[in-house]
Length: 94
Image 1 (tube, helix red, strand yellow):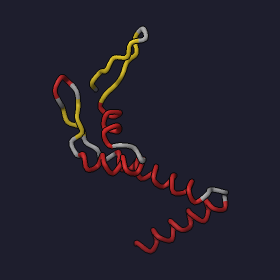
Image 2 (cartoon, rainbow, N blue to C red):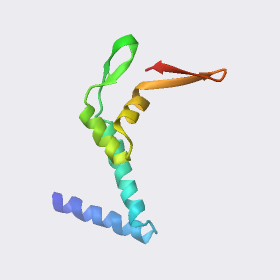
Image 3 (cartoon, rainbow, N blue to C red):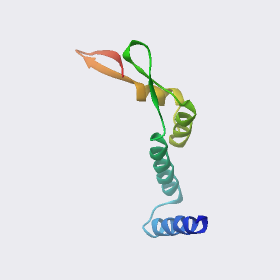
Image 4 (spheres, rainbow, N blue to C red):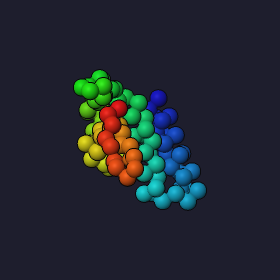
């Protein structure tokens, strides 16, 4: 099975090269796809003040690395919402 997957991977890369994707663009596409797939493995748990927290931080770190963003910023983006009312920015827990 691994051989078939490896051949498919090379076929996709060859097709992307034919379509004009640079190696950097190909890498970015694969990293983004992997990050989206890994996002599905992140679990949330209730936290104080009716907010939520991320249960499995190890999965969060994988996604953050794939997206080249700090884990803390990704966690904040996934668990905290900001509302802007009359020019004032208010932090709201999710």
